[in-house]
Image (cartoon, rainbow, N blue to C red; front, side, top):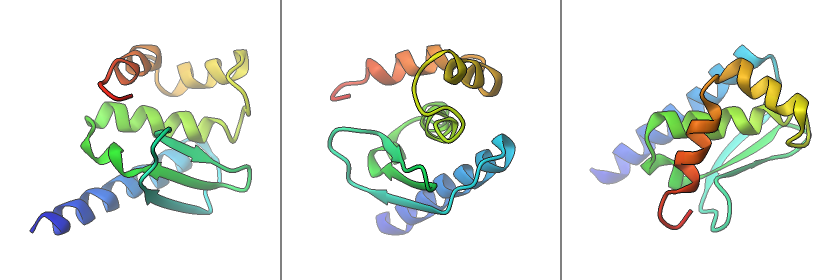
Length: 107
């Protein structure tokens, strides 16, 4: 029963990626979920997004932050002023969400 729930949750997570990609106007070519020990997610310049399976255990607001953060990297490759401007445009409370993510145990 548990695997069915995780599968459903992973499909929801992937669905959120496609919705945000459409909203932001970026192209995501692939979305993968896997165990990632040091990161929540990563994205390649070609649009291959890898999300940590640990995201499935987080509140939706934090999952959403990670997704938007990675997708914005397709618009701005570093964490400079342009990146922060896009983050503020799409998630006005992104800094608060980032803080909550950073203070999680084992983060």
